[in-house]
Amino acid sequence: MKQIHLSELNVSSFSLFNYQWCLIGVAKNKVNAMTASWGSIGTLWNRPIATIYVRPSRYTHQLLESDSHFTLSFFSQQHRPVLNYLGSISGRERDKLKECGIPYHIDKGALYFDDAELIIKCKKIMTQPLDEKKIDEDIKRKMYPNGDIHTMIIGEVEEVWIKEK
Image (cartoon, rainbow, N blue to C red; front, side):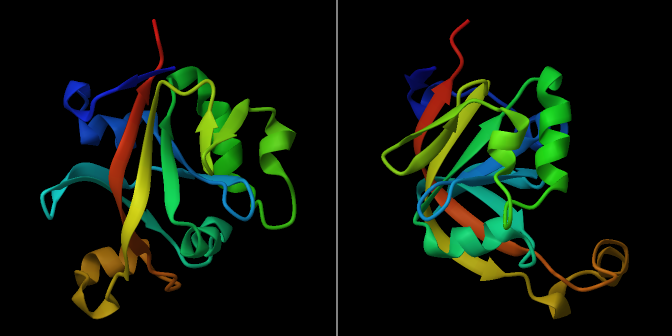
């Protein structure tokens, strides 16, 4: 992996989250990751940011509450089976990263996946549960029939890493 300046990153937020998917990684108290396909990158408060959405029922949500940093790791299509697995199994009671054999390392308290195409390291700067009363009724009916409404987590981008070709 090669670290690049944020200005060198030339990607579409829509493509990243819709087609590549990503793993949200945490490493402070326990190493864990979950698959995510909802998020964005952009600018807020004159800072480069990444926004992710995590349901409160997810184990990663609990870990994110106590961690000051998280990583977003994006993968090529060949890794889709591993990402499907990581999105369907909870790390609450098992070591799903070890079980699936995905190589990773921890550096300065952050989780980095060795096979990722792109890694964005973020410092958490805001956490806000989405307000059920302010969600469009059609969306609420389709996306939240059982509640468990996402929490929005905004992180300031601190590092960007890309896979060397």
